[in-house]
Image (cartoon, rainbow, N blue to C red):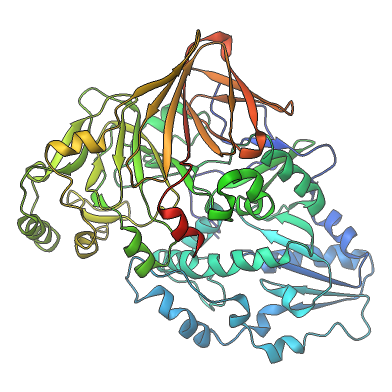
Length: 598
């Protein structure tokens, strides 16, 4: 049976030797000796020290596998166990479908709306009240997503799963949405996960923080890694006061290219292409810890729940548990153009999709071939009605559109930053490696024209002309485009071995971008801001925080210096010249009051 659908390998159970000279796909942070346990025997040994234990967890967990792995261990110890499956207390799947329907729209809709439901809405309270740890048993185990609702004081083991592995299981049809009885199509399941399940279960996670005694990583089919929550909290605090990197993951796409294949050490080169590298899209990335060579991954939200103030500093009260900046790669080397697209305005994304802030983007050209281009802004004097008619005829009749009759095409040069505030028509052309520096929302792309090509599944990708035309800003045209939407670099500080270059973002962007160009060492301070960084030219840099925490980051690796790190020294390998991108939140912005009040 195929239990996951992906060309990407599973996370190794144990850390392998990695060359410090190359990009690391599995960046693991040391947790200390003896802090990560493995296997069901060790977990069972802890469980039997209690009379009642709750095993709660996220969507996508193979609960049958967890039970069948623990049962023989407990039986070997001669423990008489009663198992209580909290799934029996869920409302009927038809009732649940009615509950979630307002948030996921009709089948075939691309997007839904962030739910206002809570986990208790999915359960029958009277049934939960019948889950009583009584009778002639040595041990009662209440298990399943939501299990802690059935007992207010029992210690909790929380099982989690990285979002990429959840999606691989989703594609294979081996899991269901929360409260559903059967798996659906991947697109519908993802929409339900994004707008309902992840919202509900993430909110529920927060309520369990003080009760969780053990956290476990369940991404392997026959293996489990776990740690005591107090040890993880120490590790999380250490990262939040020093520096860290999330685990990246990679996806193929209709327009995907070949750059990542040739530059990322150990990546699966049999994949058809790589369109994306999720460098730091934190709703979907995890953080790796290592102890005695054993690896364990936790979803990034746990860092925010525990240490959002240390991580975000001056902006913690505004964004709370949301990490506001994302980094990802768009690889079109020897690939194709992205779709002609735009993203929703703040008002539109709030009204239609329930997000608190919108998908304002920038494209930083990390690498490109000669002749590569970026599509950005409209040509002077275009007629919106004619443009829309052409797009609709293409969608309905398969007629090609001469896009450059309407949209400007700009030469892509290395280290140029193109600005894409919401409502701006844009696309990355072929033969680029784009570092996309953006606000965190990441699925709200209104495609208007996709070059008449199918997706990797052979089917046309969704075209959303009406959504786009409710958001397009047609004033971004003509000569104003280059002036307003291409950052004009300006040196704002310099010294003997460095210069600090400001790449100004648009007024609509609530984040800004600097490029630090230096050789040898430089000292930087956070000034109460969270810094998201990437080495965009050079081999490697070493970051040493004021706390003495030292980490080496290689070319193309994204890393974070949290606000609480205060200051650090960055040293280039062999004192060679390097360029380092730094993205950070602007000190003030009109949108902050709206975000904070949501």
